[in-house]
Each structure stands twice: as structure tokens, then as C-alpha cells.
Image (tube, rainbow, N blue to C red):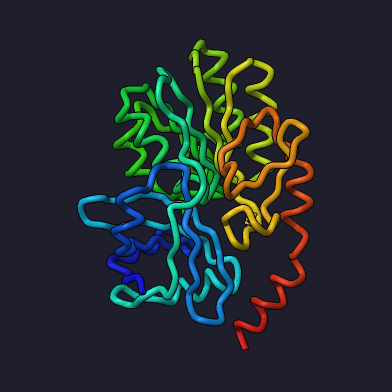
Length: 273
Ligand code: FES
């Protein structure tokens, strides 16, 4: 059992939990994820690690309450326990050797982009974080990003905070102003990662995206997390979740991501009654 040490409500639907899991905290690196199960009959869901503290033995997860399991998880309080918490899974992000990096987060993806920005900053890279939300009330991780970034740019769809528009607009403007990024990391909705990757391809800037696919076992056995990258089938859980954004077939990933919408809606409905 894995005890929740700290719980934070970041916006009306996003919560963050610091979980005592020393064996995972010891090995965790940015880009990796855990799979958890809230109770014995519960489904297994993957959540990317949004922070870890090796001294305290804790791993932080940040999640949006969008389906049955994330809603059940969100009801747990500090001191309560999560039944299964397995990890770290997936390959760690390769972040060594970069001088200037744009780290892009869309919505909840901002929490997952944070450990990347933090590690790049600790490695001495200049970090520009560009993060986008629908409106000002949904902004998360602003303070944390400010501590590990040379500059933070916020965008909102409605213009209620920062630039009105999308993260890709700001990235394009920064590139055109002469910022020479040797890497762009984009984490968030598939459509955002697709648009960013198309933009950086034009400028020839290496781009890493994090594929948050459907996952079941998380160990390369079921094939549920498959993505096509450069014409080859890859498994996000063992070959990723990071992939070259210029090679990912985002349209296929979007079709696969929508495959179980009906079942998810039904499951969520059952959860409410
Ligand atoms: Fe089963 Fe990746 S989750 S192969």
C-alpha cells in the first residue's frame, strides 16, 4: 500500500498527490511513469511522474479527474493509501548536452513538462517554458516552472492571462525573434504536439513529444499502447513514452485515443450511481 503524504488541488479538476514510494523515488527520472490501481477491482491507469524526492522517498503524480479511476483517486485524502503503485516505467527522457531548450506544456501536460524543465535547468541549459491553458483559472505549475526556467510564457485560449492564443504562436514568435533552440519538448494534447512538431520541422529543430496512450500492462505485452513512429510500430510503455515528434503518426494516435470513448463514458456513469 502506498500512502498519500500530501494532496493539493491545483484547479477545479486537477489534483496532485505526493505518494510515499521510496523504491520508485530512488530510480525515477523525468519522462517516466507509474501505473496505479486504486482498489482491488479497479482498472490500471498510467500517470506520468510530475516530480520525485529521493530524500523523502516520495513520487508526485498530477492528474485530471476525467474518468472513473481518476475521480476515485481524487477522492482519496492525505493519510489514505493507494493499493498498487508500480514503476518507474518507460524510458527516461534524454536531456544531456542541450544548451537552449523550449519546454512546452499544454494543460495537464504542463505538470509532466515540469520535471524535464527542472532537470534541463539543473544540467545548465537555458530553459524557456511555454505553457497553455483554456483560461486563467486552469493555470497550474506556474510557480514551479518559474523556479527552473529562464523565462516562462503563458498562453490562454481566451486571453484571460498571458498571450491570447496557442503555445505554438509563442514558439514561432520566439524562433523568429532569433532564439536558437537545439531542442523543443512538447507535452500535452495530441493536437498540440502535432502542431508544434509541424512547426519545428519547418525550422529543423529536434522535437521530443511524450505519448500518453491507452495502456494496460505497461510492460510491452498487450500492444494497447502502440504508436506508429517513422513507419514502425512502437510501444509507448517500453519504447517511449518520448518519441521524435517529426516521426509520430499523430492522426493514427488520435483515432486510437478516441476508440474507447463510449466505454469510458459508461464507466464514468456507473461510478456516479
Ligand atoms: Fe501493453 Fe504497452 S501497455 S504493450
